[in-house]
Length: 432
Image (tube, rainbow, N blue to C red; front, side, top):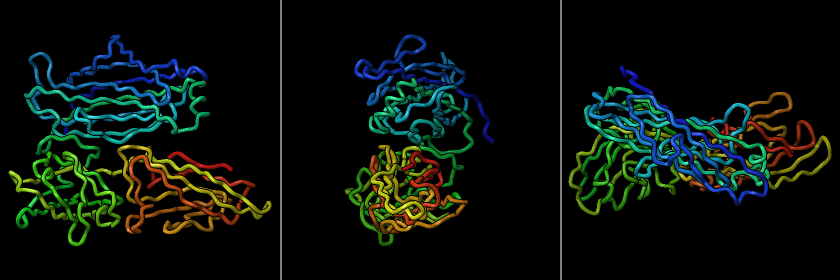
């Protein structure tokens, strides 16, 4: 059983106070409690708090570094320790958070950890065996706050300034005693038990090898994945000249960066993105030359490739014709994947509307989920098996879906609300 040893809490505060017409005078500044911008260091055996205030204008960003150590003077922690890092983003009482503000956390090597949080929300990641017993070491991270221009309209940005919208976010690092083996590694999220996902490399012939990913978690993986290995296999994948999903997938089926793997963007077969419970993905890997070792096997963390808080659904091109009681029309729903670390390989969107949806562009599929009074709930989806580009969204990509309706059930204007993406609430909606 794991025993919670400590909790280290780091609190940052972002405050915005902008007036219309004075945008140019603002520069990014960081003011710490100590009056210094030097990275704050936290001893893992003690609870400490630092408060920072950052002034931002749209397009500006600030990076707030901190580090965690397992030693103080000549004393070092005496057990192996895991770390779980959680970011919670919100606003103080009586204030609204800043629209368009992105919060990210990065490891020292630039690896993006967890998910991007936009406006408000929470994300977390786990570092297994982050500190070894009686070995003094340091973990360094930075939180980046970026006010993305164009995320919302200029009018909303101006209203943010007028209302002095304020975002507060906290970073909590919890250390627990290790109860598993294996080497340490940063995971991009996920807290499955050790051994839920494993990998192995076995020789085939010549410079060909088999790389297998096994799903032992008891739960199916659908619509894509990002896999964080417990070891850096650069000595193996660094020599890769081709990779083919067996038995009949296309070549170059994996994107590898250090110890992070994900499916190739251009492959729209569900075989790449879905791993049923108890089954494996098997890739045949071609190397330029023999690796120094092929004894690669271990465990990994797997998380969803997309960031729900980065997905939104806005509407434009609204047309309506007819007369009261028989209005009909159409509209384009713009699905935006607004993060550099988010990949969508298949999606399902639900929304409520006061209309009967009559048609939409193929190959998207739609069904009426339920009706309550004058409100219909529809589900629209497209999976990787559709073999179409509309199933896949690259980072920072937006696509439009045409929707037509044959009748309004109430009022004289179309209303769309309560939008979810793969079961998670997202921003967006429409009131014509």
